[in-house]
Amino acid sequence: MKLRTSSLLIIATLLLAAWFLAQPYIIVSQMSRAAKAGDTNALSPHVDYPALRESIKSALTAAIEKQASSQPGNDLAASLSTAFTKMIVGPAVEALVTPELVAAMLRGQKPLGKSSSKDSDTKFSMGYESLNRFVVHARNKTSPQDDLQLVFTRSGLSWKLSAVR
Image 1: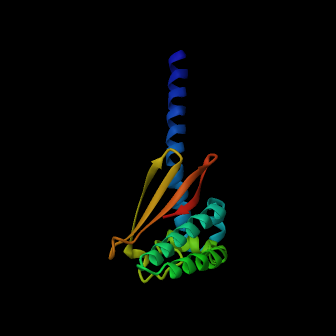
Image 2: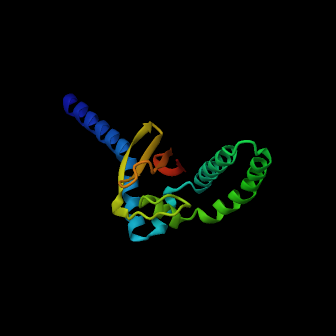
Image 3: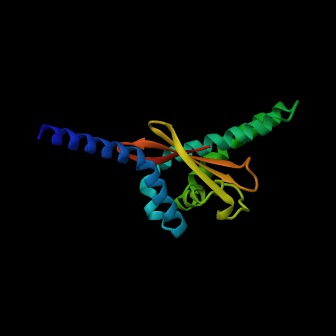
Protein backbone atom coordinates (compact mmCIF):
# COMPACT_ATOMS: atom_id res chain seq x y z
CA MET A 1 0.00 0.00 0.00
CA LYS A 2 2.85 2.35 0.88
CA LEU A 3 4.57 1.66 -2.44
CA ARG A 4 1.39 2.35 -4.38
CA THR A 5 0.86 5.69 -2.60
CA SER A 6 4.48 6.68 -3.22
CA SER A 7 4.20 5.71 -6.89
CA LEU A 8 1.01 7.74 -7.32
CA LEU A 9 2.60 10.71 -5.61
CA ILE A 10 5.66 10.52 -7.89
CA ILE A 11 3.49 10.20 -11.01
CA ALA A 12 1.32 13.15 -9.92
CA THR A 13 4.43 15.24 -9.28
CA LEU A 14 5.89 14.37 -12.69
CA LEU A 15 2.60 15.19 -14.44
CA LEU A 16 2.39 18.52 -12.63
CA ALA A 17 5.98 19.36 -13.57
CA ALA A 18 5.32 18.41 -17.21
CA TRP A 19 2.21 20.61 -17.29
CA PHE A 20 4.12 23.46 -15.65
CA LEU A 21 6.93 23.28 -18.25
CA ALA A 22 4.56 22.81 -21.20
CA GLN A 23 2.33 25.75 -20.26
CA PRO A 24 4.05 28.44 -22.39
CA TYR A 25 4.17 26.13 -25.41
CA ILE A 26 0.44 25.52 -25.04
CA ILE A 27 -0.35 29.22 -24.68
CA VAL A 28 1.78 30.18 -27.70
CA SER A 29 0.06 27.48 -29.74
CA GLN A 30 -3.38 28.74 -28.70
CA MET A 31 -2.39 32.32 -29.47
CA SER A 32 -1.00 31.35 -32.90
CA ARG A 33 -4.22 29.57 -33.83
CA ALA A 34 -6.25 32.57 -32.65
CA ALA A 35 -4.00 34.95 -34.63
CA LYS A 36 -4.41 32.91 -37.82
CA ALA A 37 -8.17 32.78 -37.30
CA GLY A 38 -8.31 36.52 -36.59
CA ASP A 39 -9.78 35.93 -33.11
CA THR A 40 -8.25 38.89 -31.27
CA ASN A 41 -10.50 38.36 -28.23
CA ALA A 42 -8.71 35.08 -27.55
CA LEU A 43 -5.32 36.85 -27.61
CA SER A 44 -5.97 39.65 -25.14
CA PRO A 45 -5.95 37.60 -21.91
CA HIS A 46 -2.41 36.46 -22.77
CA VAL A 47 -0.96 39.93 -23.42
CA ASP A 48 0.37 42.43 -20.89
CA TYR A 49 -0.40 45.50 -23.03
CA PRO A 50 1.25 48.14 -20.77
CA ALA A 51 4.53 46.18 -20.63
CA LEU A 52 4.37 45.42 -24.37
CA ARG A 53 3.82 49.10 -25.21
CA GLU A 54 6.77 50.14 -23.04
CA SER A 55 8.97 47.55 -24.73
CA ILE A 56 8.06 48.80 -28.21
CA LYS A 57 8.48 52.46 -27.16
CA SER A 58 11.95 51.72 -25.82
CA ALA A 59 12.98 49.83 -28.95
CA LEU A 60 11.73 52.53 -31.30
CA THR A 61 13.26 55.34 -29.26
CA ALA A 62 16.63 53.56 -29.13
CA ALA A 63 16.60 52.90 -32.88
CA ILE A 64 15.75 56.52 -33.72
CA GLU A 65 18.34 57.89 -31.30
CA LYS A 66 20.98 55.53 -32.67
CA GLN A 67 20.26 56.68 -36.20
CA ALA A 68 20.34 60.34 -35.17
CA SER A 69 23.63 59.96 -33.29
CA SER A 70 25.22 58.23 -36.28
CA GLN A 71 25.14 61.56 -38.12
CA PRO A 72 28.57 62.99 -37.18
CA GLY A 73 28.87 66.62 -36.16
CA ASN A 74 25.18 67.36 -36.00
CA ASP A 75 24.38 67.62 -32.30
CA LEU A 76 21.42 69.95 -32.87
CA ALA A 77 19.74 67.42 -35.18
CA ALA A 78 20.33 64.65 -32.64
CA SER A 79 18.81 66.75 -29.83
CA LEU A 80 15.81 67.69 -31.94
CA SER A 81 15.36 64.10 -33.02
CA THR A 82 15.38 62.90 -29.41
CA ALA A 83 12.83 65.53 -28.37
CA PHE A 84 10.65 64.77 -31.38
CA THR A 85 10.89 61.05 -30.72
CA LYS A 86 9.68 61.40 -27.14
CA MET A 87 6.74 63.54 -28.25
CA ILE A 88 5.61 61.30 -31.09
CA VAL A 89 6.59 57.70 -30.26
CA GLY A 90 4.64 57.43 -27.00
CA PRO A 91 1.21 58.39 -28.32
CA ALA A 92 1.78 56.55 -31.60
CA VAL A 93 2.65 53.29 -29.84
CA GLU A 94 -0.29 53.70 -27.45
CA ALA A 95 -2.63 53.97 -30.44
CA LEU A 96 -1.04 51.26 -32.58
CA VAL A 97 -0.41 48.43 -30.11
CA THR A 98 -3.68 46.57 -30.44
CA PRO A 99 -4.80 42.94 -30.51
CA GLU A 100 -4.55 43.11 -34.32
CA LEU A 101 -0.86 44.07 -34.07
CA VAL A 102 -0.24 41.23 -31.63
CA ALA A 103 -1.92 38.84 -34.09
CA ALA A 104 0.36 40.12 -36.87
CA MET A 105 3.46 39.59 -34.71
CA LEU A 106 2.35 36.03 -33.95
CA ARG A 107 2.19 35.49 -37.70
CA GLY A 108 5.83 36.63 -37.90
CA GLN A 109 5.34 40.21 -39.05
CA LYS A 110 7.42 42.97 -37.52
CA PRO A 111 5.57 45.40 -35.27
CA LEU A 112 5.01 48.88 -36.64
CA GLY A 113 6.92 48.10 -39.80
CA LYS A 114 6.23 47.10 -43.34
CA SER A 115 6.24 43.39 -43.89
CA SER A 116 6.46 42.05 -47.38
CA SER A 117 6.88 38.46 -46.25
CA LYS A 118 4.14 35.87 -46.16
CA ASP A 119 3.38 33.77 -43.11
CA SER A 120 5.03 30.82 -44.85
CA ASP A 121 8.31 32.77 -45.08
CA THR A 122 8.61 32.81 -41.29
CA LYS A 123 10.33 30.11 -39.22
CA PHE A 124 9.39 29.95 -35.56
CA SER A 125 11.42 28.54 -32.69
CA MET A 126 10.81 28.89 -28.98
CA GLY A 127 12.22 28.04 -25.63
CA TYR A 128 12.88 29.06 -22.06
CA GLU A 129 15.33 31.88 -21.45
CA SER A 130 14.87 31.47 -17.70
CA LEU A 131 12.30 29.86 -15.43
CA ASN A 132 10.06 32.94 -15.72
CA ARG A 133 10.90 34.07 -19.27
CA PHE A 134 9.96 32.28 -22.49
CA VAL A 135 10.98 33.58 -25.92
CA VAL A 136 9.46 32.91 -29.33
CA HIS A 137 11.83 33.67 -32.23
CA ALA A 138 10.23 34.50 -35.57
CA ARG A 139 12.85 34.47 -38.33
CA ASN A 140 12.22 35.40 -41.93
CA LYS A 141 13.55 32.60 -44.15
CA THR A 142 14.49 35.00 -46.96
CA SER A 143 16.30 37.50 -44.71
CA PRO A 144 17.58 35.73 -41.55
CA GLN A 145 18.79 38.99 -39.99
CA ASP A 146 15.12 39.92 -39.47
CA ASP A 147 14.60 38.23 -36.13
CA LEU A 148 11.53 39.17 -34.13
CA GLN A 149 11.55 37.94 -30.54
CA LEU A 150 8.32 37.78 -28.56
CA VAL A 151 9.05 37.62 -24.84
CA PHE A 152 6.56 35.97 -22.50
CA THR A 153 6.83 36.31 -18.74
CA ARG A 154 5.19 34.21 -16.09
CA SER A 155 2.11 35.79 -14.58
CA GLY A 156 0.98 33.57 -11.73
CA LEU A 157 0.49 30.13 -13.26
CA SER A 158 0.01 31.52 -16.74
CA TRP A 159 2.17 33.40 -19.26
CA LYS A 160 1.74 36.80 -20.89
CA LEU A 161 3.38 38.44 -23.89
CA SER A 162 5.22 41.36 -22.30
CA ALA A 163 8.01 42.48 -24.63
CA VAL A 164 9.28 42.50 -28.17
CA ARG A 165 12.91 42.50 -29.21
